[in-house]
Image 1 (cartoon, helix red, strand yellow):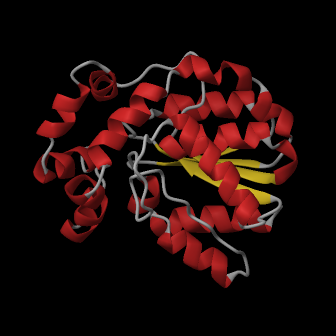
Image 2: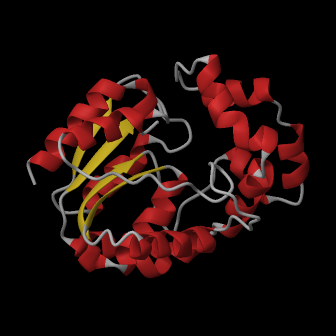
Length: 232
């Protein structure tokens, strides 16, 4: 997902860091892969790498973790790029997430095979190749991906976001919203809400793109982010 954008940003002289979510990348960790542990890990990573002030780019689950971190460390954020996520204490999970959060969560995840997973991530039009699917499927096939998914969903109660209400607006930093108009998991209504609640936020909506907007529109999303950061 992030490779084209990171390559372009690096070529422009920016340092780029893409942390794993616990148990869903190459980093080894026994779990649990909760919202709180991911937030603590991001805080520790920022300190250990001495990153100082950062432009934060977030997507999906990374939005919960990254935006919470930003609210807790307002002096360390220079800009925000928010894509296909939510950060609202009155939010509602989509149907599959509700199922995973239930007592049947482990059974639901155990029943997911590669073909079903591929169908899910391609559901709103993402043109993932078989190689792409294999890369996304890897932590589920050989790691703790199934357990981590249950752990994160169950830990992420939207009420936990209540202390952060209004905090993104208070950051006062330039904000770009990057969104697929056909996102079935984080509908574009969320982008419009961010746009209303964050003064000066600008929305770049990609017609026909779904949840994985950076994968579906790598050239156009990269150009939007590069131009946005260059202008700040």
